[in-house]
Length: 171
Image (cartoon, rainbow, N blue to C red):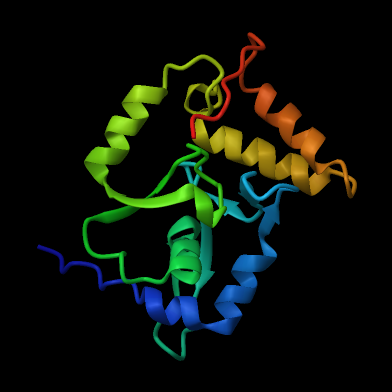
């Protein structure tokens, strides 16, 4: 039997200036306060952003999911207890808008997914899956000329729904 992985030191990571700087440098913030803030770094198979956080000398170096790191940075780590997960109200796996996150558990996340994945034009119904959608949006933003980001984001999102249908946000 293998030993359980050590707990992630979220407080230490959120307080590390170098980690926060690396995190912030990879977040594209949309023009409005309610817009998604897109992750521009590495993206996992689940569509969530990834980042090497912490430092080796401090013993805190590890690859983390950036929405959880972002939650710790913006809301504190007190809610990040074992079994808790950071959920996205917007259903965009790579979103980094602190206003789009809420703490929940795995069952709540599954119930949300099941309730919304079949909605026409919704983020969870994207034919590319969460990772394909996140990569398409990230790559479009990185290739865009300054000021063109909102238009290329909209086009990248629309490409995941070949029927042309779309779903307004649910919150």
